[in-house]
Image (cartoon, rainbow, N blue to C red; front, side):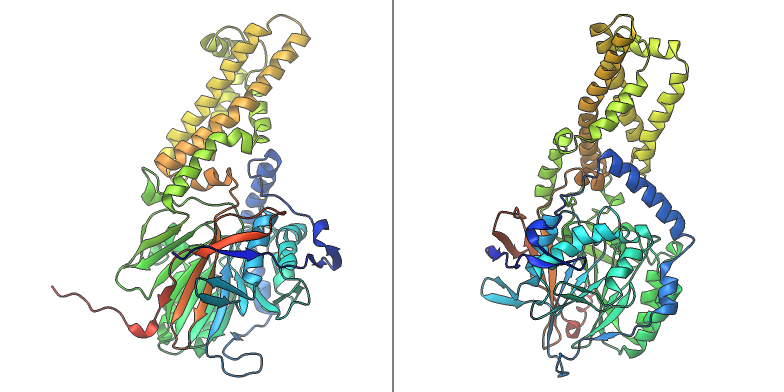
Amino acid sequence: MRPPAWLAWWGSGRGTEGGEDRPLAERPKPKMVGWYDPHLLLATGMEVFISQALGQRSDYRTMEDVGLSQEAIDYTRDRTRSAQEELWFDYMADTGDGWESTYAMACLVAQPWIELGDRRLPHGAFLLLGGDEVYPSASKRGYRDRLVGPLEAALPRGAVPRHDLFAIPGNHDWYDGLVSFSRLFTQGRTLGGWQTRQRRSYFALRLPRRWWLWAVDIQLESDIDVGQLNYFRSVAGALSPGDGIILASAEPDWLYRDIKDPLAESNLAVLEKKIIEPTGAEVHVWVAGDVHHYRRHEHTRDARYQRITSGGGGAYLSATHAPVGGGSATSLKRTVRVGEETYHQQFAYPSPSTSLRLSFLNLLFPLNNWRFGMLTGLAYMTLTWGTIEGSLVNAAQTAVERYPARLVWLLLVLGAFVFYADREVPTFRWLGGTLHGLVHIICAFAIAGWSARMLGGPGVANALMRLGANFVGGALIGPGVMGVYLLLASNLFGAHADQAFAALRIRNFKHFLRFHIRTDGVLEIFPIGVPTIPRQDEAVAQYFLIEGPVKVDRAAGPPPTPRG
């Protein structure tokens, strides 16, 4: 690993936002999304429910297929139409969370060059945003404040040279039916010094030295529509035997499922088997975001095939460490199978040991997510309304005996915790969800018993005081129980890994990929890491080469098959 280098922020501090020229200091600068804020939990839950329901019945991509024509965009020639001998381009996914982290990464990719030791890497001819361009959900204002603002501040209008910008949507971009995404990326807009060029939410780029970049839109159902398949089928007519493809999608399917399993009925598998393979071309690099860290899986017998998870563009950090148990059932597995092929993890950033250490910050859940306490306080208060007396056992007994309807409410609350538990780990869902709910119920009645002893007595005033004490106790104790639950569930059972790190809202350990197609046709991939995101009043950021560069040489051929 080369020593870290330093980057000074070079944006002028002025740019356009929503058609208005405003100083950088006046731009909205949202903090990292508070995923456990009660209002956000409710709003996001409703949006997910609605978008999934509509996603099964309507598909914006059908309108793209009818109304928007698009051919493969050619990067084999430069702006003077001379043949390109080599090409640099950048990939960055999962942006648009905290303003500072997105701005820092945008500044990095906008630099004229990056220096790594004795090597200077020039800026990319284009930047591909690999999905989930905004959090928590798509909207005109969300894109403006959390993505467009940082991009324009990093590369203001009038910058020379202008950078091309492409994007594919992730699930968060689809939450409004792709309306805001399409408005921003498919209408030829200029975002500061970034020029959008695509006409659809999917596209193909023809690159020098017989390389191609295919970017697919898998929508909310992890699927490719018929119109998109037809588009890539038409592009495949320009493929030749020996061509190499970089396939970008919003989710790393090799971690979630085996797309070549016939039971999956995956159109991604159709794309590779029915459209690409008959041409003699091959996919050599699969790249996706969705999980907010860097991990690279390499074919166990042939280093020409790489699967890279790269979601470090600005969103909260995701875990890289495997749990004690249940690791094979999570996206953190180190060995994955795709059909008959096996891929093994070669590198992860941050390191698993760092990830494990960071996970213990969930013990500070009440401090990082104090608004969540309003939800648990309300739940504890509604569980313990009415007259309750005595110790924990007596409090629970008298509560149910005097108000039998409370038992129904207790069962509903317990069922809610089972419903919340990670469904990807079925055994844990029932056991862990039930135990989690019981701990909250026990804590609620323990607090109620204490408040009954300390604030006992008849009268409305005392009853209101007891309810208030139960609310405050729930607001203080409930988030602590949630933090311990997330810590144990993620580290011991491989459940709630994403939710555990979403609670931490870690803005550091970001990265992006810089691709280089050399004059000899070898593809180099430089993963550039930023361990610490600077604050607004800081002037520099540290960056370094995470590993490699990773090299893919199509001409090398597969290794010889061992005898015996």
